[in-house]
Image 1 (spheres, rainbow, N blue to C red):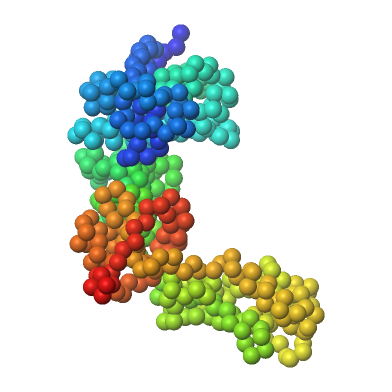
Image 2 (image 1 turned 45 degrees about the horizontal axis):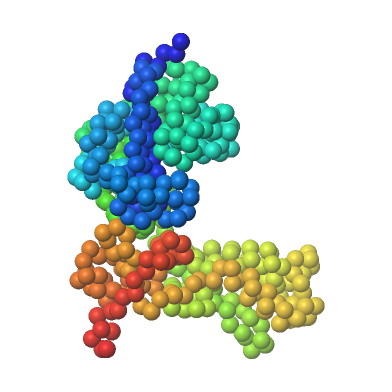
Length: 471
């Protein structure tokens, strides 16, 4: 007979939604299977999301607008749902999704919801590390779980109960309880950090700063769930030497909320450079930044010239390749490109040779021979252009400053530079009118990735105040 009485009460939760963004989308169904002393109880309900359900979501879940039209909305069910979940461990697969939606739904009606959360993805990784994947379909197949209603809330919640019982049978109650405590953050806090400090940290996007003696910055990090991430440091202190050292030295934890992940990423890059915390990998400033620029010489050879920081205007110059923190790094990069694409080191300016003599690379068959006419200059030029195009610095694709809306804030950018974050229209156009902002290579990389991805559709073109006055 199984002895599950040693476990806390577990609420296995699954939800269906109108989409994947918990601020924009809404819940359409909740299923909860509670396990107390090996006794199961069930609660489920369809929920009127009061918004459109996309057709692909209807196909996946089988939940149509007609099915939810006469159902209660989340606010109508909030107290019942809270009663079903309070004083229990919230268990879900990829728990950040389910917990994020339910927490956001409670927050919209003024209820603070902060349960202890167990993610069964993490549990699977911990107990079955040999499995290559840990999504729910993989777990179903790996452990022979019985599927009753896939992609319906209660059906998927039941799969989690089945998985829990498989875990217990496989590793035993004691090991499973230890895994539970490890994953829900039951590790002791550092001696100088009080539980009330941890409780005050929001589980929201932002940056956290850990301070040591005399308020010296030790470590700066970012997360979309600040409290969970900070607790994660202290949990890992039991097994990770670096985290143990951090836990022993930390005296204070501070944090700055942002409206989303992009704001947190930008803020982290800025704070690390400004405060130089001792336990972060040091991010270098861009004061010695340089890049290659291509130009034809009098003989028609396309040669790279190194452009220094004083001459650089990233975002406005179209003919820039690579951005480097030092001349040494730039030359090392060009040398690597030369070898990879069998380019002539002499024509690239990396090697001095007498006129009519071949470069060393040609002698070891790593150059096509443009230096001695064995290959045409035109072909070499084309190869240089093709090779360096992979590393071309993208020109700013907008006419002046833009804003990206993230939550309640507007992130203002121009020429790949971060100008600031605005919370109202006055601040927005004041930032858009900023003149001198230092280009930062780390922020450029963040913004390039963001604007090539999901944020591309959220760009708002801004006019500077001077442009408005002139028009």
